[in-house]
Image (cartoon, rainbow, N blue to C red; front, side, top):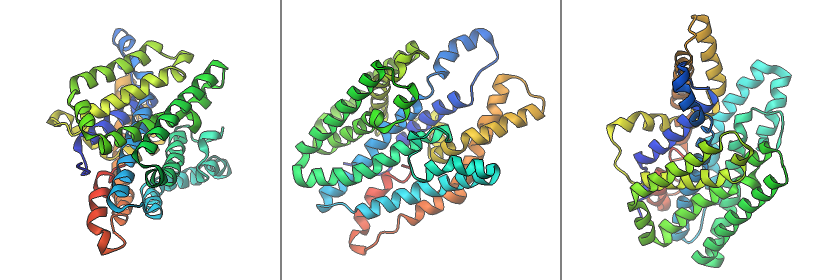
Length: 359
C-alpha cells in the first residue's frame, strides 16, 4: 500500500474548501436567471466540511493502521504532538487576532476554542465547530484504534467502526425526528462521528482488503456518479430541515465516493488550481470568514457592486492571506514534526508522515 502524498487528494481538499468558500462568501453572479440555477448549489456548499471529515478519517486511519501493522504498536504521544504542530499555530494566531481586535468580548469567544469544545458552545466563531469535531475525533481514534488492533485484530476494528457509524447515524436521526436544534445536529460530535468513522472504515478496507479496495477505486465513473447523486440529493433538500437529518447520510456517501474517485487518479493540468487551494486549505478555512469580510469592505471602498466582483475580491484576499500564513506559520511548524525521534524509526516515520503532511 502506497502511503506517499497523493496530489489527487489535494484536489479533493481544493474541492472541499471551494465549496465552503462559495457558501460562506455568498457567491453570486448578479445575473438573475443564472443565480437561480447556481443558488441551490451554493446553499449546500457546507457539504465541503463533510468531505473534509471523511477525508480526515481516511488519512488518519491509514496512518494509524500502517504504524500498528509495521511496528506492532502506536506512538500516541508523537501522534498528538504532530496534531498540535499541525493545527495549533494557525489556529492560535487567529484566536490572538480575535482577542486583540475584540478585547474582553473577543476573549470570551475564544475560551471554548482553547478548550476544544466550541462545537458545544453558543457564542463562538461559528465556523470553528468542525475543528472541534476533528480534534475530539483525533484524540479518541488515537486511543481506541491501536487498542482495537492489538486486542481484537482486524475483525474487531471493523465491527467497532460499523457500530460507530450505525450508532451516530441512528442517534442523529432520532434527535432530528424529536426536533433537536439543527445547529446541534450539525455541530455536535455524537451526531457527526459517522462521516469520520466512514473514512477510517475505507482506510481499513484498503489495509486489510486491498483487492476489494482496488475494485472500488477502479470504478471511477460510478464513484463520480454516486458523488454527484449524493450532492444532488442535498441540492434537492435545499434549506429544509431534512438536510441535517437524512441529508447528512447523502453527504457522507457522496464524499466517500468522491474520495474513491480521486484516489491515486491522474490529475490533469486543469485541476492544478484546486490542488493549490487544497495545499492551503487549513489556514484558508480558519481565516476566510474574517479576511473575506475585509475583502467585502475593500470592494465597497472601491465602489465595486457587481456580486461576482465582490466575491472575487473576498475570495482572492482570503487565498492570498492563507498562502502567506501557510508559508510563514503553517509550513515551518509542520517541518518540525517531520523530525523522527530515533534513527531506528526514521525511515518508517518518513513514509507514513508524507501522506499526512497536509492533513
